[in-house]
Image (cartoon, rainbow over all chains, first blue to last red; front, side, top):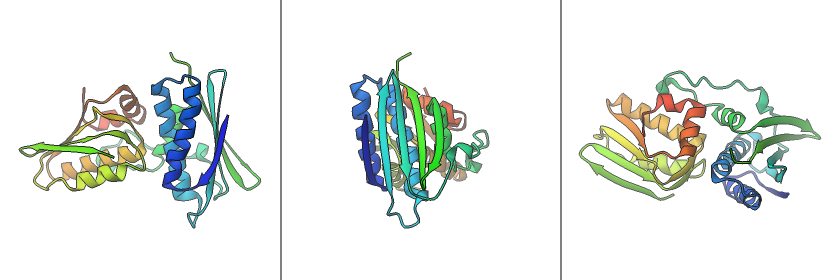
Length: 136
Length: 100
């Protein structure tokens, strides 16, 4: 298991991604799955960076653990309370020119990960994501 | 992010290298902004792209809207399986022109 707390900023995405990839590589995660997990990290961190804190000076705590071929990622922050599991999925059928892009990152997260769970405890948003990393 | 640029006639080709995510998507957007108004087609050559997140999808969508407004078009070529899966998951595969 690996864990880190970083500032909620663009640079944090690369730091968290690198940490996650170390854990995934240790468990022989196929690149196709690792890349999709990296995408999810980008989506979740971007949302926290852009929307969780008013003064952009918050932090993100991230942990990743692989056990029994399942990667469990946990993102937590002390920003405004927000449950991404109850957001509406974007309409992906409307014409490109009229497409609203809001909510796309959370939608992709839900589609990529096997499970997405949210909790709000002691003033912290806690998002727990799981994905099987076994090939096939 | 390294973006290789080339053109022939009114077709401009942008070939980004690596991942297109929230950190690198602005660089791709900047490259699109530098394509002259006279361009009739932008081809995104994804042969060296590892994966794309929603930030990158936004750049593709906005590029297509921009080009269509000017009577032009956008095409994405040489996508790998990961990018293809992302296009399928999000439905963008139906909305963008993907040449396989």
